[in-house]
Length: 399
Image 1 (tube, rainbow, N blue to C red):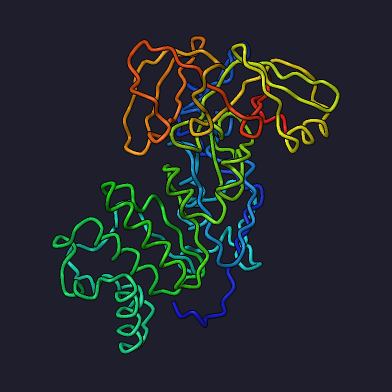
Image 2 (cartoon, rainbow, N blue to C red):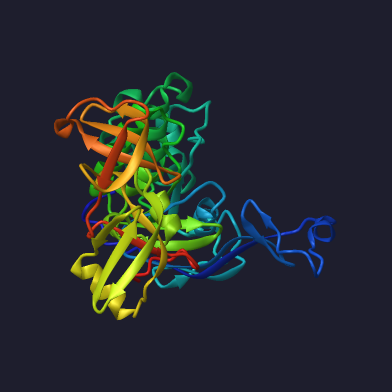
């Protein structure tokens, strides 16, 4: 917890895999016949070994880095965290913390601490006793325990609750206690599994800010799991986006927002979600254009250079444009207004353009009147904000 602490905490996950074996009798029931297509269970692959929850997971985490694993339910993010914690056995690959292979090391000897979604506090103990419990098990001196508990309580602003039982606390206060119980141990690695998902929206925002402040005060490497992309974007130095047990992309929040690797990442990151269109990519020498709904725009020089480097040719594409990057105009792609949501500083126009649902964000300062159901509007976008995805592979053609 002390800023002067020099303990290093790099974490490497090398080709990590997790397979849940079939329970007796289940294999026969699930085993596919030769002519059957491959079965999926919650979109996870089923093999003769069992259900594959995580595979080909490669990640190097730097000392004191804050890494966020994000993805929809069932994508393998919590399973990955539990393998790092030692709560799940690793089926394949290596987990290395500070240069030591940890696959077979007991959880208590890994020098990690975990904060759970449901707080997991002892109801019969006071806040102080909950936070001191792991230090008592270690047989630390009483004065050391007292100092660490009070330091952590001060950092988390829960000193006034130290003599209360968990049932007398709000959800946000309980989560602070759970975090305090973890940080008193000075862990090399702090694991957090959806710690804010049980809180209401206002508390979630407050606790997000608290975690950012906490991270600046304690010298620990963080691995944080969430399905909430806002948490991922605001907390992570880098985010790891997962789907069906596989990593889809690793990058800074800005990188994955600006340069999504594929359609899944493009649709998952960003709120409201990215608009997608059936479009044409046209190449003319070194220049590239996208054409959709009678509108044509040239891509910016950076995108053109990347496409040219991969020798991308003219082809049908899925075009992605974020709602905040669309502009209502006098001419362009024609669309019919279906819903207009007033959001204060902007209006979210839900329109139908060529059979596709599209969202256009119009700043209220730019509005020339109210939009009504059935109104015809036109919109455009620039070549710098157009994302071009392969129809065959769903991958971003720039990369």
